Length: 92
Image (cartoon, rainbow, N blue to C red; front, top):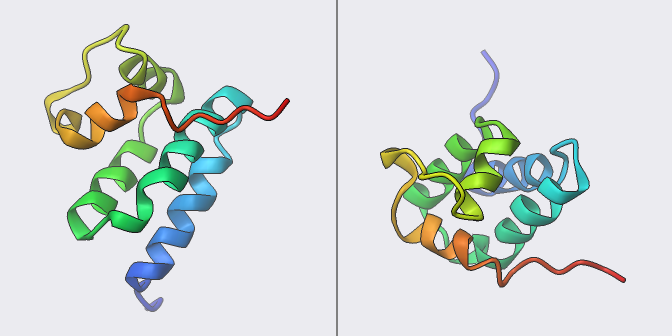
């Protein structure tokens, strides 16, 4: 049986998954959100983010851009923070 990841291990895995979504736009949005907020997260927040990572990028981006209503399980303060989009830093 594989050993369970520590909390820090889960954060490292989430960071990798957040920055390797398949499109640059999703990487900047989801990865940037992770980088901006993850240090403040506890168990509930990382579990929320891990569940978000299981969703399709198109849906997550639509929820963040407020073009679609997020499902109830994702609504709340973390989604509100994601919808601010003040964490997206696009290199020039």
